[in-house]
Image (cartoon, rainbow, N blue to C red):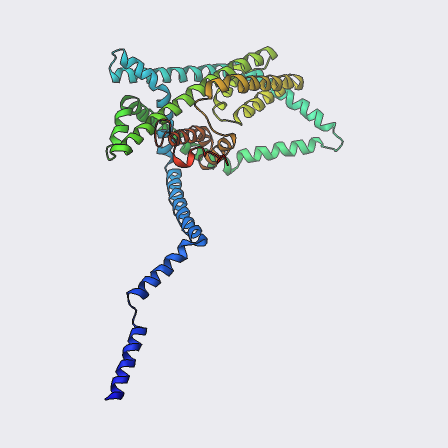
Length: 389
């Protein structure tokens, strides 16, 4: 009996040792939580969160790049609607119906674009024979210059290059390129139709569309959505209008300089300067290089150097005097951010991405600046006060 009692007591003690009680479970939980509470655990947690966010962003970017036929026209329509909205609002305040004000604004934009295209077409058609003859003369001079180099480039080498170019033009690659060009033309027409329709509704019902998107929100979140919408429209519209003013000044003064020098195709080159000005940092350089190339082919190297000087002078005056006044309150981005956004947009969507990347980045930064209040940025974007000690 004593043996049995002793063995039963030993079994009880073993059961107490082996069976996990509440205290032992709490110890396990505390140990598991301690693994994520130290520095390595916090880094691991943040890393998992960052990876999840990057995965979502990657999926979203991939989906957007697959739907460029719809996304790009909608983004362009949004940017232009933000720029034209003050005109529509002015006509509405004067008692004009919303549909009439929208139609007048659209017709104004279409008339301006059609006028620019007509001027460029007429200028190219009138000056093309002269430019072609000047280009042939310039090519002949280039051949003479190349033949005078220390290393020998014979006529046979030049003729071989010409034959290779002719074979390329007659190859199947040109035919496939023509098919691809026809497909791109169809995409352009379809995108243009989507752009016009979306722009019409953005101008006519833009505030109502944004209010519909904010319907699930209430209280502080609704007010935040209101601030973000107003900030986005203000930033995009100010950017487009400011860039258009700067681009127009560049185009006018560079066009006057090209006309004084005697460079042909002044109007097309001025329009090209205007369009390339919407690409920050590199647009002015590209416009100057193209203008100098035309001057080099058409009138000579001295005039080309003069054109380069004119472009540099106009860009310096615009960058130091005009742009800070026009764009200071709209585009408050660091040049590094502009460069990164420009590169990312170009890689993802091409030339259209280069044009849209910077205003989209500026609108995102503008939304962050009003995240917690009209003049109160999000917490991570606020300036930190230094400890006086």
